[in-house]
Image 1 (cartoon, rainbow, N blue to C red):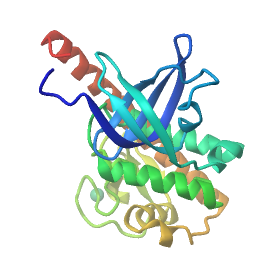
Image 2 (image 1 turned 180 degrees about the vertical axis):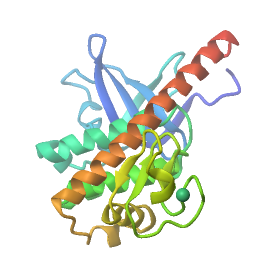
Image 3 (image 1 turned 45 degrees about the horizontal axis):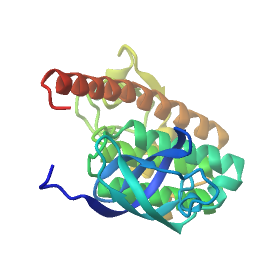
Length: 257
Ligand SMILES: [Zn+2]
């Protein structure tokens, strides 16, 4: 332990916050160079605590952290960006929870992912200011999947490898993307995808948000892409969670954690 740092300074976004013990708070945060961390803020629920106002859910802050035996400990915190609308507007709050939940679920602790930190910050900024919150969620889902190694293939058929034509196609979450009309028709577990939905998904996957925010989708398209993404995410989340469980079990068996 002596070769390791005792204290470190990091920026962090608060993803989850729960009460812990008598007066402490347990935080799940995401950092630019240490990935996801679980931290304890001692005494943060005491009215006299100077930290308490600086550990708000969904805010970005500058933290001083002391390495602890089990959990690292927040010793100082200062809010840099409060993202207030995420706590004041119920619909925005709900989407902020969703964004945080996905980042938490698709990452392991201390798995560095700078681009995902950036995406989280961007998503919180957009959720504060933009109106089409569902479109932000779809954009976030597609880019998150790319950053954690589950990017869906939307341009070539995942079976015959031919470029996809503008026709009814099919999505197979288990196989990681879209099937052409010919391959997908009888594919077990594949869901139909309209020409327009595929166009929108590809657009969201490959353009930046400043371009995507100009999209105006019909309610039907919104519903269709939400269903498709939900199926895809749920499938890969379960696989991910199983693999995380497996890693933890293996580590315990090997006596390394
Ligand atoms: Zn095909």
